[in-house]
Amino acid sequence: MNRGPTKLAYAHRHLLAIEGLEPAEIAHLLDLAESYVLLNRSGQTARDLLRGKTLINLFFEDSTRTRTSFELAGKRLGADVINMSVATSSVNKGETLLDTAATLNAMQCDLLAVRHAQSGAPSLLAQKVGAAVINAGDGMHEHPTQALLDALTIRRRKGRLEGLNVAICGDIAHSRVARSNIHLLTAMGGHVRLVGPPNLLPAGIEELGAAVFHDMKSGLAEADIVMMLRLQRERMTGGEVPSAREFFRFFGLDSEKLAYARPDALVMHPGPMNRGVEIESRVADDPERSVIGEQVEMGVAVRMAVLDTLARGPRRNI
Ligand code: NCD
Image (cartoon, rainbow, N blue to C red; front, side):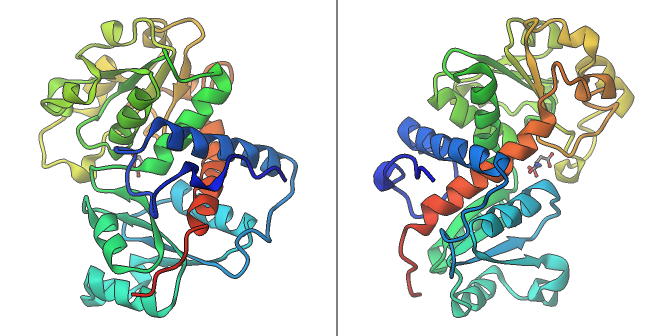
């Protein structure tokens, strides 16, 4: 297959965050992912590419889409994939993150996808392991592969990222998805509008280059993309949201509120969705407007592009 752009287009050993990446590096990953969309749709695989390499999925938090798509991405490129989840690992027996790193080094893994409740855990591991580390979501910090798959979905549908108005709505405060998307979209010339109640919008978030709105009508005006986020109750300390029903009334996406956006605006959601809380089923399942299923498909292609790119670097011995 066509291997896409040249090697040096991505100048890092790991993928820990979108913040700090150059637009050209983001574009490189998206272009390469584009070629993997075509490969996946053709029903073929590229099993020679990562043959002999090992990918470990180290998930300290629950995940459905992200873990399975890393697994599928690794397997489609021929890597040996091992899933380690907290429930079955020694972390439950009191092992520290650094002891885990030492174990992983002894196993000589090449690629490590890490999800952790603590912001910064993947970058700490990256300093201690020989493998290339991919942040699969850390606390409220970043979820870079999610932002890349969102961008790929948007770019394929709208033909560009530059100049688009993207409204990200709901629980911004607890969302690593929102943070990675803000960094990516602003780096690529998009306009981000954050919409939610004041207590779910962190103070100073405008400094990242996004506009802030506290009602759906003004927030969705001129929006090309409406991205809905789940209320992440597991990260809340209590009292942030009065009730799911009240939240839906003001901030839940239904057909009436979607009509505030552009007539061709697309609806996105990273999943898992809470139907009837941040989004109603009629909108989520509308094939004319919703690209939620496509986001999952793009997730596999983006993770193949990231694994392919990072696997080109040498494994360090630590
Ligand atoms: C998101 C996550 O884990 O950050 N889910 C995902 O990766 N698709 C969003 C969420 O949990 O709400």
